[in-house]
Length: 536
Image 1: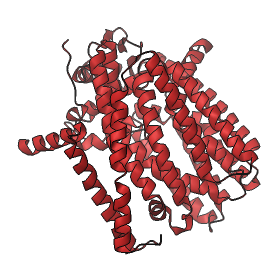
Image 2: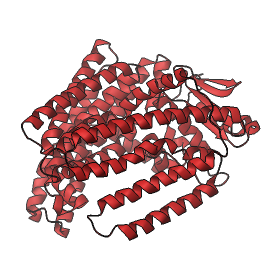
Image 3: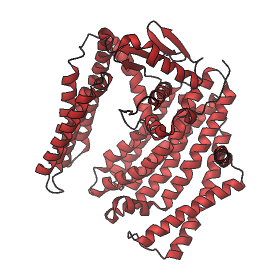
Image 4: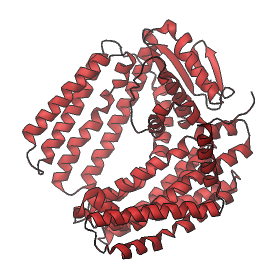
């Protein structure tokens, strides 16, 4: 099969663009796609399936249909079309007995089952359910240990225990099976009942802002009730069967590695929060949370440019086409840095204003925390490219895990030093995270150079260029601050107008400067727009 470059955006109907990026970012656990015949929802779902599989090497996929004897001429053919459309036909082996596709590089499978095939469904359901029990109990136990030894405030402990019950009963969350059996009427009525019960309870028992414990009890109780009702309903359709412990442990091992890799960012932020909560000022954790929410919300959206390129990178490596692989890494990193660097610099400058707009003047002191968090995002962005697009995709996830543990260890050490010296201000803990992640980046750079995985010159040249140009936002900010006479952080119309002018002027300057330098991303964007206009 001849090699071709595939633009996934051209395969997805415009109505599904937003959903596609949500799926790639794992924003939600369930997606209900509405639409009649010709809405392209089947095409969209079939395209997402191999892409998600390639992004998660420790996972398999199961396609369920109500009737087994229609699988071949329906969902199987649809997925076959998607694999071909993505240019991955050579990467997947088609099987008819059992009906499946196997990713040649990793052995991952896309299985096709009819829900009327009881034995197979019971096997898959039982295996996933048992794994869910193990992970739910383990994570909840660790969570409770952290609460016992990491929190001194009794009221907070009670709150954390109540909320932790949701994690303990997570194994009963089997809504995906009800969806497979198309029990949508049950799901609708159950959801309506739960939501109404929750609202009634809130209006009855939550009267003031101090009623946080009753609120937590209501949210936990309704969540668990939702799980129990779903479980009771699906038990009419499936049964538990015995699963070999070796199978479970093998699956858990792979999933554990993937869990760490997928949540490496949380490793540092959770450690920081654990130490900050021991301080004598309860506002510190609020400042940290607000800053994290503002910055990572934006950064998470922009990181979608990385995830969508992973399947193609894996394809090039599988074909041993290292030149195309390197070109795509350079293109992906350029696009990502083009977006994330100016955003981070802008948030660093406007951190306090962003905080006031997001959370009110009450949390004004969180502004400096937001600014420092924005600086940290640039280090995070570098690590994301090196770790995900280079080391991970080259099958060195074990080394990557080691680097993350080293970074986590450094973070704990530095946080402990701050703790011993009674320093609990969140900006210092973000600083320790920056140091820890910088060490991870240095280890990754050395590893990449040692094994000659890719030439990093282009990646870092691009990063430097965007960073230097973005520094021009600083005089733009101070110019408009002087012109508008905004010297306080009070939320006023004048302040909003000033910020708007700063953002627009900075964007024009940024694009203009890159155009003069004939930046590849800008050139591509201009050509894309020109072609779209020409087609119309």
